[in-house]
Image: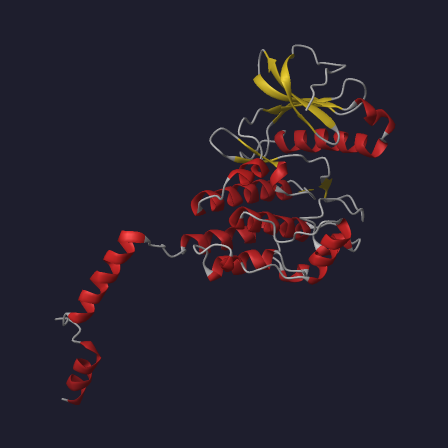
Length: 314
């Protein structure tokens, strides 16, 4: 990636280096005398001639600021510090998340069960907060989840976001994660975000996407007609109950999905807390030996089934 010098830098900001770029903006690590190190998003120059992308940048600024402007905030939503959505001086200042994206983390190694489930819950809580503020995300995916140095997840990139009072049938999102009804041109909903969250959860746990098409049409067909491989076959430390929770979130029929992210979180927490401990190696062998000894030794309190049978006859 070659660095691009910004045409405009807001007052009091000093550019340190370019962090990356997206469809609508360049992202810079910058210094501000009050905020300290921040991620500064500046719109790409070509957006002046691409009104759809310009609207996406405006949307991200407005929605992200609105999610941070009230009395209540979520630690699992990217923090917006200030911004201006329109014109030559448009910008968005965000907290700097040095941990990169969840997508980058997943590309390195398979996550342990505890880390994977914690990250899923953190993304879910961020999405739950957005929904309570009447905002649909419409593009929930690992690449849109930022991580702090402590690997805390923060839902970000609300460029495709939509206030629930708005109506649209645009097919917006990333094909790997889009709900079947979005491919069919139906309006987005809480349940379509729940579906994308389910796909993300599957990927975080399995270290691979449930659908692997090589084109938009191929992925659309898979979302509309295919059932992903059960998570139980992807890793041994997942309970049947947990695999069912993810499958329900990813149901092709949106009426069969969780009716809210809150319902997903509640069920997900319940089944992960009840997750049986997986013992391996010496610990497992010692447990088996002790279990066998207990079976061989007569119990003074129970006496076994036949002992009870003899007593009942007397």
